[in-house]
Image (cartoon, rainbow, N blue to C red; front, side, top):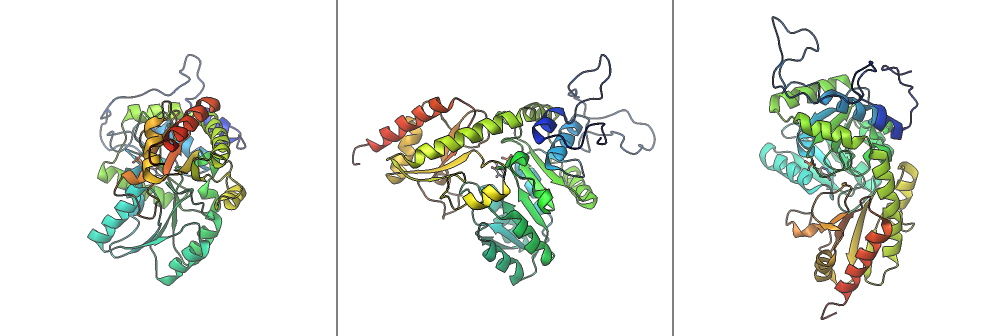
Amino acid sequence: MGPEGRPHDLSPATVAVTAGRPDRTPGGPVNPPVVLSSTYVSTGTPGPGELLYARNGTETWVPFERALADLEGAAQPALVFGSGMAAIAAVLSLVPSGGRLVVPRHAYQVTLGFADDMALRNGVEVVRVDIADTAAVVEALRAAPTSLLWVESPTNPMLEVADLPALVDAAHAVGVPVAVDNTFATPLGQRPLAWGADVVVHSVTKYLAGHSDVVLGAVVVDDPELHARFLAYRTLHGSIAGPWEVWLALRGLRTLALRVGRSQETAVELARRLAAHPAVAQVRHPSLPDDPGHKVAARLMTGFGSIIGLRPVGGVAAADAVVSALRLWVPATSLGGVESSLERRRRFTTESATVPEDLLRLSVGIEDVEDLWSDLSQALSAAAALPGR
Ligand SMILES: *Cc1c(COP(=O)(O)O)cnc(C)c1O
């Protein structure tokens, strides 16, 4: 039995439901309460673990932090932050002024923007690599002393899949710590700490909360010193989450396995149909046997995720026409909600220039697969029928 009297070998789907519950007391609640208090009664020198002030810690964070740590298989409680970017900023503080940071050439665009800002203001050397090209990453790590290897896998929005254990081994061989943004895969898809990664970050906003109603982030580590460091960072910077948001995220987390399971299943089917559609120039999903990420994903991941990359025949005009013609799919940024959504990523001038102009990033939700397909296929046909095509 685990420390809370639960068996150690529960499956992740069960852990998502059971972790972080209050003790079983007759008449006690099944769910943890939301406590709205900025301060706590305190006299004299606070005892160890005593709540003091809500920027330092609150009881409402604890069950979520426990549950996410259990899902990632972490030895320390997770640390919840006010957004994914707040969590990422905390982890990137591991890179000192004048340090060297290796990042994927395609990754969440604001993470890359943050790295560029570190280059500008703190003289950090930022090296961009193709994270799916293990030899290229190893070469970058060996070229000069490096402060941190940042990994996203699958990458946003290009869906490149990293050979995580190989990258972790190569980085550790030259003394470089590894941080993994596990937002796309979720802890049900891969557990980077089990491969030896030092830090996992999440945009909790996406699959973990899962209902497009909160913005939140989290950092997960095994090492007590790293935990203390990121906890101190959160308190010093005040990059904290509100209690309501964390309570909603825990409520969302309870159905993680159902949501992720359904949306992945649907994504596999939609990717297969899209690959055969005459109005589609290219489709990227690691489930497709000829996708560049398929082999590594099949070996390392449980499931292939529910983000699809789609390039319609006809370039940017056709891509924009598809977005406008959809009735069920929501045209919006973000991903990982119960509702299916999509956007053309290069509509943001800040997106990497090597992301194709006409790439649509589809986030598959939990609606009926046939409803999603009929909307998508009518939109592709409408775009293909545009004048001039
Ligand atoms: C959305 C996202 C982030 C940023 O998280 P926020 O919660 O929006 O701050 C980081 N990484 C990935 C992969 C994302 O998709």
